[in-house]
Image 1 (cartoon, rainbow, N blue to C red):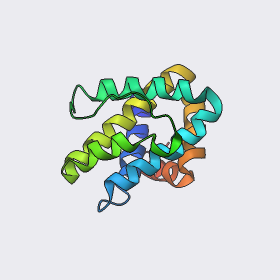
Image 2: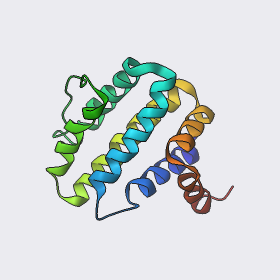
Image 3: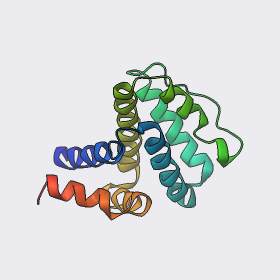
Length: 139
């Protein structure tokens, strides 16, 4: 289990750090793709519940992450997160982005299982994210 968590967290770190010059844009892109995949399965309400819980948990370490009411349209779903991240230095932005995504995906994995979570991440973020993990943690 610890190895699986480490692999998943490495994949998240690699995904966020793919463009160190634009961590906010990368983070929002990752969230948008993940949301698009998950909302098809668990609906908008299910996604917002998991997202809000993740914000609350990550907010214990990064209290500037706002837990707001969900936006009414998909265009602004992550606008609050974008504003929160843009207000931070790049290193802090990356750390918070990784922590928030890891928290969300860890919760998701506990709820639906590792195999389904991996499939959703592969669909949302592509095989490249998975290949990075395979290179770092050969089986």
